[in-house]
Length: 364
Image (tube, rainbow, N blue to C red):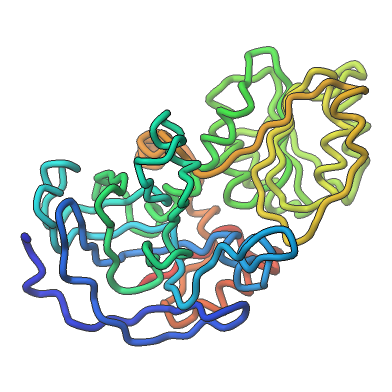
């Protein structure tokens, strides 16, 4: 194993024990690296809406009558991050093109490479589904150090990208994947509903698809201002106007061709189904805190819609790194807060509140 001589034996880390129970503790640094493993010193870690909803007790993470809990406490959260390579297991430097001192990132999911999804290339739907920060096999980045297991998908990150910006690579990769799921064409009217971190990334990514019209929706005007900086042609606040009527006016009554729902609000789902045109494509890329109920008839008998989910950011990390390196997003506006690791609950509360922040980043 290369490196690790200056790495301490213990580190500060956040440990999730259950909803609302996140603690700052001292843990051993994972220094014993096997074949293909990488140890990083975490430089920055973002707080995802999923992290915040896990803290709040969302059923996706803690289970309900129809599904098992996904989160496996006690576990260190965090799947949005960047770090400095401080140790390399045998063969990992050659495999990933990494050297000690490089900045790097790992895709949020560590595939098993053996299930049918991995074997056919859909590794982001891997059956064991070991995403950093939720499963015991993959502790996350809300700590001073973090290990990338063998089988992880790792990328070198240019040092020209500051760490607080590089922590946005993961959510931007998700945004790019969501846009790809929309199959946007030049003549399309595209609506992105929700201007949080993923929504703003989707506006920026969709802009590069050159649709006929790109529209952003959000309940906060200050977030819509940032959406315009990301490339939105028009913005509407659903709290101030009837957005379904506004989109119909813009499209001769047809509706939008692509609706990307990224707010996590049930009202946005119903709104999208009413707004979208016949044969349109509805992309859902959110974590919901509660169930959503709509008249399902509109999907089939009324409009024959294409309904597509979006999850993770497969094959999109290089593009995300390139977009941030080229300053194609207003990162100073998107990263609204930076806190030390000790203030994780303060950061989570900001994310769950949603009125004052967009992306909150921890700096261990």
